[in-house]
Amino acid sequence: MTEATRRDGLEFRAISKAFPGVQALQDVSFTAEPGSIHALLGENGAGKSTLLKILAGVYTPTSGELIVNGHPRIFSTTAESLGSGVAIIHQELHLVPEMSVAENIFLGHTPRRGAFVSWGRLHQRA
Image (cartoon, rainbow, N blue to C red; front, side, top):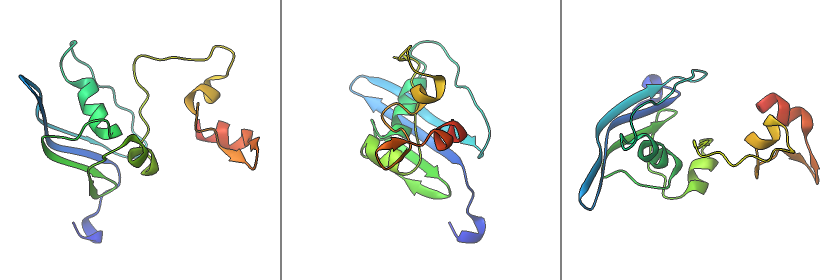
């Protein structure tokens, strides 16, 4: 893909994922533009979590292509995914009730200025 045709955002192209005895995903394509909000809906076992785990670097796809900001990517670890600016909020939330919504969003990744929390950046990013 040339710089002239590069698109920011996220794209899954014909993503498939097979586990022994189970085809979890088959040819899933999905595009999300920057600043847009999407929801993945479906029955239990439809592959929603599997697709997001591919994006998060938990699983690698059996086939297909993941494009992040115009560049093909395969994340081998969650750290690689996070380093590319991808963060996943899973449906099984384990929130800390004593913390604010913003603090829970960035739990473990709180923006800091030295040893102190950067409250302005935390609230702006949330």
